[in-house]
Length: 171
Image (tube, rainbow, N blue to C red):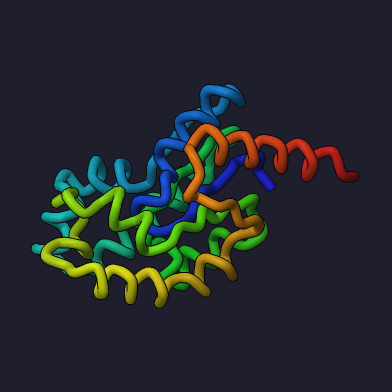
């Protein structure tokens, strides 16, 4: 294990917000794989989906994950669908991965007006719920720990910090 902490979960679960809080409290760097994908691809994720499709995006996401894993002491917020790509899940095996879980109502409340999410564009509550439901098992299987993301980001971060201390003091 390289001391990195990975955050996974559905879009709107609070990974970036919690990640920033954690990086500040722990003195780690904060990294968002979506930002790396956009920077390296020189285009927005929406445009990437439109021009090249989801499979292309997932491969870029995998490459971004490989890239960030070379450094230590980072809080790494991953894209909501990173667990749908087998090669990305394999990279996360054996790492300290926190699954921030949310329900459909929470996601809808947080994101219903957000037009920057390609898989939610023109999507109904039912479609979003279906997508979350399809990914739930992958999140559970990939995450080392599950944290309830319906609570305030500060509380989620505190739970993760408590858990990190417990895990790391074990021999």
